[in-house]
Length: 91
Image (cartoon, rainbow, N blue to C red; front, side, top):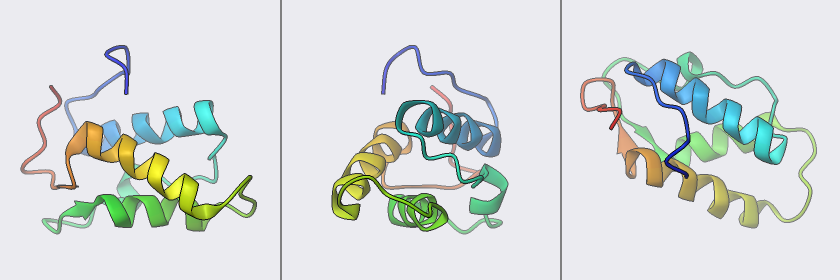
């Protein structure tokens, strides 16, 4: 994650920004959106986020485990291992 990565004050919109970055950088553009991932007060985990992104893709270039590590790392750098709307702070 770069300091230039855009952020938003709302978790759902911020997840959309992260998903847009994954689309632009790694071509994971299957249409998962932040609203699909956030379920009330239940925490969104790095594992659930990663699985949702990869499960939506029909074709993966290279081993899934490699992509799991890369996507999970991006999530953890941005939010930690899990996040809720209540806990979210953009900076």
